[in-house]
Image (cartoon, rainbow, N blue to C red; front, side, top):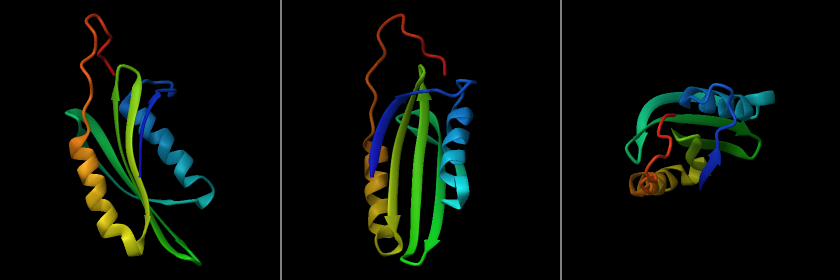
Length: 113
């Protein structure tokens, strides 16, 4: 599992731009198959949840990421797990997701995006 806050480097500075770029990286060269995408919320912000899967000789693996965008920062809560641990790990991901909080932006800070 991971939590990340990084500057948005996509050209359009939109949530879909950030998540589409992430999807391209994850599915490049057949590394993972994109399985599902749904609109959701993260800390009250509009977010996109993506699910990926992969089958290897060592077994199935799964990856989920919840991505939100605020003021040029991409917030990501993610999980990479195996079939054996998927149910338990998804519960932990939900706990992290629902406990995720953002500090208020300072007065005058840009709030678009």
